[in-house]
Length: 424
Image 1 (cartoon, rainbow, N blue to C red):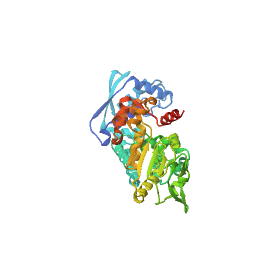
Image 2: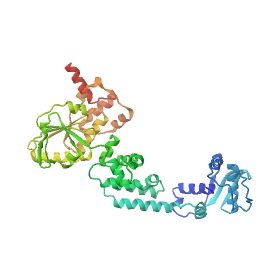
Image 3: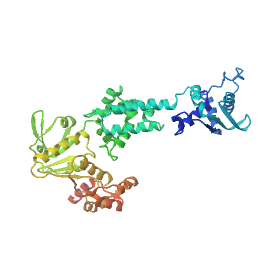
Image 4: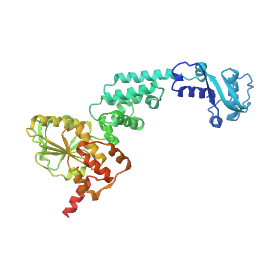
């Protein structure tokens, strides 16, 4: 780096919300502080600043400028001789207060510093993002690209600059996934290395999905967010217990035979056909595994372990089941969810109601249940409490109010503890 003061000019010019967008007239000034001398001193030590000045008529070939302050003053004097700046001295030729420059010389400053003008970079960046925007099909991804183009237009740093174009390649590839794919297989196929996604883009993709993807909830764990994008660290499995009839590879299977429950892996969920001859009159989704395992088989009832939030593959399977039941079961099917009596549990209930079963009702998620097990309650953390105080769920508002009032939550597993205690 040779022109420290010119780079300061260009940095200030580019940080302005107005100046960089077009050629401006007028003057600007920059103050010089001790931090500038110190920074230049550090650059000298790191050999990031040239101490020879062939352009200077007074240069005699000797590297005699050994301090940052001397270098900065010498550079300022040289620029003043070129009529590019004017110096306001605190102490003549020994301490600079500020220097003034004309915006009309900006293009010359860019050439001297060998920097690409910001408006050119913004144009290039905007065109790249606009190209990916044109390829995107989903509203969530187009919304993300739209905001990034707005950032570029305002001169703000975009994710393209922070993470490279590979991030956009990654996002467009994710949008095209229709079935679960292991993360490392995805990374190898689309990013040419099996570990690139996890090492470079995982956290950013999760952040983008939480802000834009319609099926991603803020309470989801990272792996659950990735599941919504069809990225898996392991095969998706849905545990069920009860009356569910499917056809798989031409064979009809009645899962009611598995009275203690069974698991449908991702391949089964993709390939299974849900038969119309169902005898399901009630569906119960269960947040926690221990409670799911403990619930006894019940005739004409399907119990499903939700492990928090359902993955897209599970969600689509259950939506198909709901459609078939509504069309083919004469008796109206009842839908219930049971989970933790806390912010996360209530959000999961609302998520399932909005995304899968519109007629979902809470089960063991009432004020009565809360009062019954309040001796097992634990203090709610500050952030979930603040979120819950703003949260609205009409089917569980009484429970929400009770939790906010007591500032305590109850984990679903404690229901089992009390039941076992009563047995003893």
